[in-house]
Length: 83
Image (cartoon, one colour):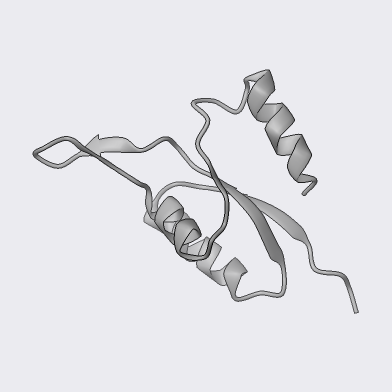
């Protein structure tokens, strides 16, 4: 039998959260989630987490929200996850 994959998932909207749900039901290991930083929403412009972040937190998956993945710090952080 093949060994489960170590997956780093990247996504933000509800559409991506549906894919994350499918992966959570698989034998693979989600080691982290990358999503956009929380954005102001609604009349009060309150910071709101993305659907992907909400789902990841419900499953105790580490969430990373760098402003960009191009920064050397973000790339180094991703490399330490060893997906």
